[in-house]
Image (cartoon, rainbow, N blue to C red; front, side, top):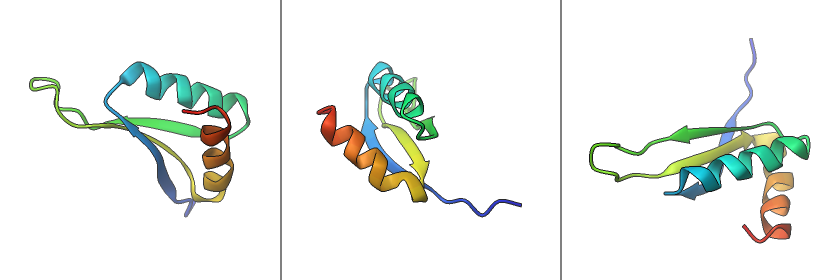
Length: 68
């Protein structure tokens, strides 16, 4: 059983932006997932991009380097 911890590295209200970031992280060998916490009926809430706690520093560097 894995005890891997996932941490939020980015929040947005734009689903496309979250998916593009996730794909970029994955292409950089940083496993990532997107969790949509928006309430669609009211279009409120945020979409989060998460990575393993071990990859947080690499993900933060990727986000900064790509000015996301």
